[in-house]
Image (cartoon, rainbow, N blue to C red; front, side, top):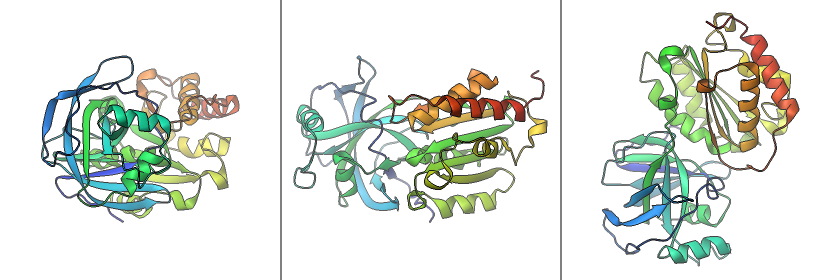
Length: 336
């Protein structure tokens, strides 16, 4: 299923289970929560935990809501103003608290909504963006995500801020021969948007996406990604890892060898400095791959990361060793 690309539509595919604890929000002067207009108001400021950064809020309206995989929602929102977002940016997104639809709202979210004029809020990652639109992939697991998934056409949202480095901007394409994107769950959303942008650039290196899900039913954009791979056979490929069947992507040497295989760029033509790795999703996966790549000798500038949840889970040392051993052996060409 090819996602909608209508101008002025924000496709918000939400993974509300992540990021909600990544930033804390401080109350500020409140905008009218019932304003129907799509306007920017500079009087209201949100602060990330610890103080700045600060940013204004912009109104948008939900156009449609659709399910894109088991437990994942895609929300399309209209906006009037150019946003300047790119896949990988992080923004604050708000929706009015509807107690009738989310009676199980936890105390923290209820208090934050009360401090924010009745609007629930959290930070989310941009999946796709045009001049007047953006996408965010979200997992429906809590009261905020349920509110978004149950929202009807015309529901107002508010958004603001622009944090984190976009995926494409973090890749030094002139010194990179291969790009590997490793995601878990709805972390695939920003990867899809980055791939779409990269395929428009004929000078961008080949991209491989390895997306992990617990079950087959949770896979997002399977047919769409298959189509992109078929249409760009020398520039893009992808493979889903179903962890309930094969284990985590770092769990076995055989799994890591799939990632190290470099089918679009034979590994005997690559050194450890030639591949850029972007790791996004479960913090345990991110920690394991970051540590394993570092241990293998991959330079720091060739690894970019974004962790969503599971931050307290310690990385598995066997997984780190699997990654470092396979990557080091696969790309043993002398580093220039």
